[in-house]
Amino acid sequence: MNQSRCIGKVYLVGAGPGDPGLLTLKGKVLIESADVVIYDALVSPQILEMIGPQAEKIHAGKRPGRHSLPQAETTQLLIEKAQTNAVVVRLKGGDPFVFGRGGEEMEALVAAGVPVEVVPGITSGIAAPAYAGIPLTHRNYSSSVTFVTGHEATGKYRPEVNWKAIAQGSETIVIYMGVQNLPNIVAALRFGGLGGETPIALIRWGTRPDQEELRGTLETIAEQVERAQFEAPAIAVIGDVVQLNDILSGCRPAPILPH
Image (cartoon, rainbow, N blue to C red):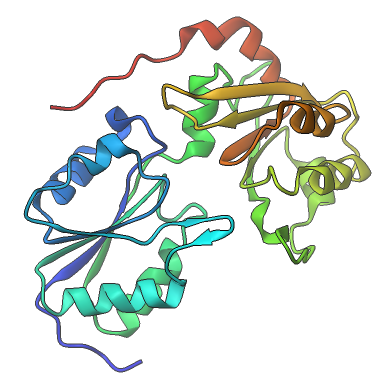
């Protein structure tokens, strides 16, 4: 890719999982002062309201079946905006480097000669279980966690994830974007050695006021999802730590709106 002459810099900013109080201070300063903000679908409305009035706002979000901008177009847009604007923010839900395509975008920007910096955000795979009262590690239940995407299978399943190894090698499994393919994932984990009684929790809209949770076991969860019409966006937590939801679910953090 030919290098571009830029006057500005692109910041890949993690907006966190939804609760605006979880946005980092650095991220808040950047979106308040940005000249351009290119944002994803899962960025909460409260965080979008923090964008400065001087900024050009561009929606580039991706949702299943509703793709706004192809990835290549989004990256090219970042390159173009950095040529005429000092501060360009690519605002992403969660953390840019955790299933957020931030690494791909940063690679392309570096190749184009565009200055770029990542500002980490709190990822939903950590925050949503916390708000549901499910610690991912616990000395009595789990000393290992695996984060894995379930989205690679949507529409064209390619078994790149070694579900058998995950089933046998981790005490807590956190699956992003796995609701649509949950029956296949559950079957693969059970084939890998996890029992049907293994607890699982699905957490939708994690950390937001409308957060929803659905608990079951690997044996029952697919039927529960269908019966409840439980839809994405949601993450799944699998393992014995899910049982702590019974004790800790009443300790959900209260939202704090930044000034």
